[in-house]
Image (cartoon, rainbow, N blue to C red; front, side, top):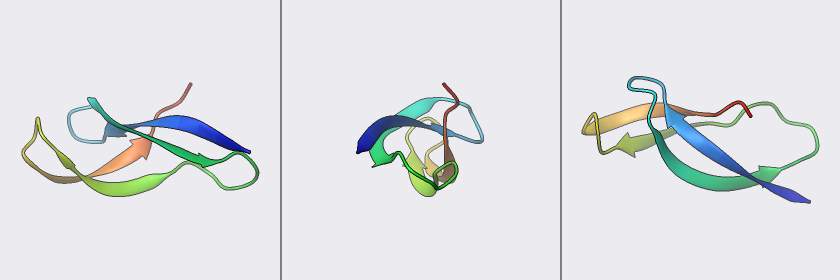
Length: 49
């Protein structure tokens, strides 16, 4: 089963991306994505619900 998650920039805390991830196991998702507010590539973390 997959679950929708929201990714937020670790620098400016804006929620920029939405993706899906596996519900079983695993921790929080960390990806390096482009932030249009910071205008650079920054680490994005899965937002807490």
